[in-house]
Image (cartoon, rainbow, N blue to C red):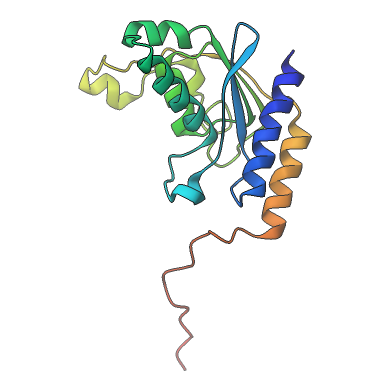
Length: 183
């Protein structure tokens, strides 16, 4: 079943690529059915938090809240969901997935620069950060989730290659002028 859902996530990543976004896509699955999907929208929104996972989560939050579900009911719903994403969730997204209590995450390629599920940090294990422990914060204690990587990774990497070969027209330009050596 995983390859079929990852193919749908790859379709979302292709949509992102076609829209000049970093090609990451995801789907959220409950009881064997896709109930939400997302693709990166960081360039379109000029908002660095609009990763594919956050887009898909927000769709469900709006839907479930409009149905009148309270916070414990929403948490119970997420606990029965799996997420398929083309690239390992970054530290921000892995933390969010842990806090909402997603059941399991399946990802394509590793995220060697920002990965939160093993490449840089292992936030899927649910360990609270030292700042949480020091402040005594219990409000959003991470729950952790199962995590499996490497599903259709070659396809995900190929989309990244395509994106970076064409160049990111939305990448920031360097702010500092190039200084010439003094003679």
